[in-house]
Image (cartoon, rainbow, N blue to C red; front, side, top):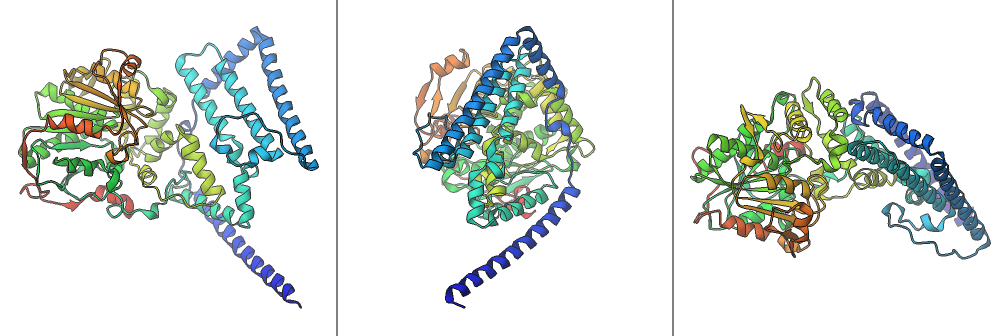
Length: 605
């Protein structure tokens, strides 16, 4: 036997051993997959799609229009058939040219679509035909949806949204046989990428009781309090609703009036403290403020009957009271982010009714208070979906965090669902070590009662802006919010659109209102450190005009809005006093180090 023969034999033996090992892994993974799917925790099917009446109305309207004008349907079909034949002819021509070795002709420029970045989508006749036919199908569906008549604005928006969901789901990149990136990776790795992908799929299913939630970040790369959420501070108060963190001062003196910041309880607060270079928490303490941040509890079944009033009473009002006692002041400056900004507005209205002047100024980060236009959430805020949420809450009384997470993800489905799924399950890649995506996956449940109050009373009923929202026996109105305020919104925010936030601020009763639109979206527009000088912001003192006129007359400033807010806050924060040390107050000793047990619980689990 020659040396070459021995090498071939050794290589073949190694390949056989690898094949056996892979087959064993596949068998083990298959068993795990069967096991997890056998015990899959089901959810209400009404959360997956709108009531079929929507599609029935659309189909009825479409066919009625076609019956009145059949030539219109024929014209659409002829266009579709013609384009399909053209795609096939181009593929045949490209195939024939490839066989003859003829050079490729330059194709017409196409819209940029990251899904089709692989050169094979252009150079390979098979993939080119698959792509072109998919885009033709998508265009035809969208055109048909646009031409449906006799639907109101909401139904039309929902039909368009859910049609796009189907279009995106059927993209050829989502299937192994029509994804050149996945096929190339499988060949390069002798199929190892597919086995690794199956491992990732099974692991994600096991982690979520059979519910497919794509893991966006490598959660083994982060440890809460070690390399994420590291600003030094101490928990100085704890009750059933929240922990109150007092951050350690970084200056010898601080402004007399402290800041208490209320983050949303849908996610954890440390989005404001991911790392030192982009930490708003660190920046605030560096400006010489006593900063307190609320960390909300992640509710379980024991919190089923918790409502908005519990968040107000045991969260907002209690935190304000504790901060005043620790700092020895009569007032605080309050900040509310997203749903916590909405609830801060409710709290301020209630305090107005009670004659409580404990809040000197209020700052709102991307906070909706007028829900007359539900924006991108319109498809999900109709009765069929909210009815399904109430049924899902059911006996447990808890709205699981994945429902909100999935809703947010499907608003950006290619970036947050299909793209990550392709990389993880088809390519076998480990999710990236990305702190923001790690935080995004660290969601929290919602108490059922509170969720229904919010969805029915605020989102659907718009009662705070229109008629009044009942709480504590009081009827709360937007006009009652009369403290000096600044509202920070974000230009491309798809969760709390700036125009909707603007409408709410216009209705508030304060004589001193500052409105800012930061570039970028719901997170990046807020977590916008001065050092990066990445996103600018718009300001306009005239809040009487409508949103478009406001923007047309706004002044643009390069860089972060943080310094503008700092200057605004400084005039409302009093004299300098010696820096307050967390835990020094006899009645409020340090109970734990930041970020506290309510956040670290996720890491321990």
